[in-house]
Amino acid sequence: MEAIKYSKIGEKIEEIKLPENLFDAEVNEAVLHEVVTMYHRNQRQGTKSTKSRSDVKCSGRKLYRQKGTGRARAGDAGSPTRVGGGVAFAHKPKNWTKKIPKKKKRLALRSALSSKNEHIFIVEDFDFEKASTKQANEIIKKMDIGFRKCLLLMPDNSSIVRKSFGNLKNFQTSRAQDVHPYLILNSSDIIITENALKMMEETFHE
View 1 (cartoon, one colour):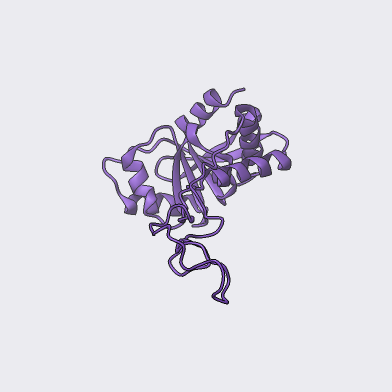
View 2 (cartoon, rainbow, N blue to C red; view 1 turned 45 degrees about the vertical axis):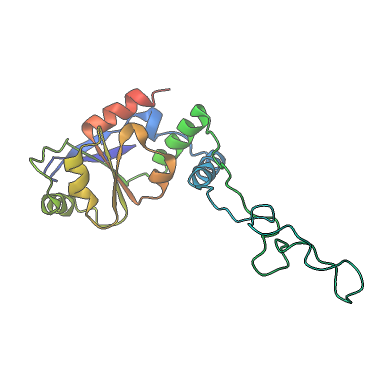
């Protein structure tokens, strides 16, 4: 796969060949589906909680005698059938986290990157003196890739670059070594800085 390389100010320089082990892999849709599903599962907080009969604070006294009233048999005030009582089959906090095997995650990442043919762009490392959304906006306009949903991969979590591009509409940033297949698939275009590309080669070489 080839990609257009831009200067740090957004001017087109040349077309370069991307590493085959990352960008020319066979797209494995089954693994992609599994990894993305597990990613969504791991985003669940699992903090939902409601009070069951045993959690409700009330007297345990029987409301009225068992027989002779003509009414249904009743227990205490904490019964789920009573106003102010507990909830039947109450929800309790649950850990939804499921570990994703390293090899499977990397296979999914290679598949996700390989599926983005003609939507991968390489840019020289930025050297912003201070955070500037205006400057970031001008660079993207010069690159002429449109303002679709973009993901910028950086070699480090530079607050200056992150703040500059983070204010742009439909723009997201991530460290190259932390990128997840879901972030790739959820973006229309992927912009990778030169050092971020080298870091990806080193990190995901297996």
